[in-house]
Length: 434
Image (tube, rainbow, N blue to C red):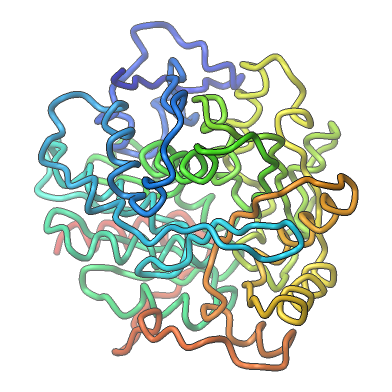
């Protein structure tokens, strides 16, 4: 079935009138629905109801592209979905009954490569209404920026503006998007990721600015970035019985993709959403408001999100399934020291080095193994440890493994602004006139 989308609406119901439904081409342009809410599918298809043979495990790109085409209309033949999804996704054993879904071998070493490359492939064939090109406006807590920059670099009709919080991403992460000028313009915001995300949302709330600059989003607010992430969750479990999945979570896009994957028929068991000290999801599941103030800085910087945008989608999915948010996903906060302990345990017990984000998931998986003998949790491995050399050295007392493809040479360039909407507008309009 060709997917159609509707805005969640101000109450988050997703029950807009039929005339408000749009196709995937409209949903991936701009950023949010006309009312400012997030797009959700009108119907959730049964994409993953069948099982796959063991021989398909080595061909994620072909397997995933075949199923993704079911979501699109027939007029997408020019999009190289197989090429976009041809990434070295693999399962590997950590030990102690815990497996890792390794998504760290793509061009920028993070799971964001899957969605960013898929979205760029769609944009490469979808018509650009009234524009010579699109400007991809993206807020990043670290990994999204590099993935988007790499994905648009080879697409003639795309350029990118990447908003990042100054001094809150690693050097490796930053260089992945600050060394691609003029195709990619980096904008360092004096503030947090939440400030970057707020600036982006305000830009998309201005229809005149969106039209003048041809703005589109590659954050997980865009269903074209979010939906392909459902593919690897399904691929990982399609030849086995349901098993618990542990998802390190920041802006909640990846755990939303896991829930969507399960709703589409993937053989996923309980979904455990792990956050760090920034526990907005845990508080929401308990019926409490988010904490006031800015996000807490931790080792797992991409999870330092105080106001996750995909929380509204999770609430919609919970209402759709008739369950509480705490039943839809099992949220838990893993503080920094527990994550560090899990990093050391994985290295010392099994010789496996994980990044600080994956470490939060490993900590939760260890608890599950202890609580439920015989359980085999699957942890979503989100980023390569070489992207966080300072944290690895501090926690493990050794250097991260060599990963030369992640380290971009060249001169860096970025513009610094306050968390001010007018300042961002000036940057966007300047780029639109070039």
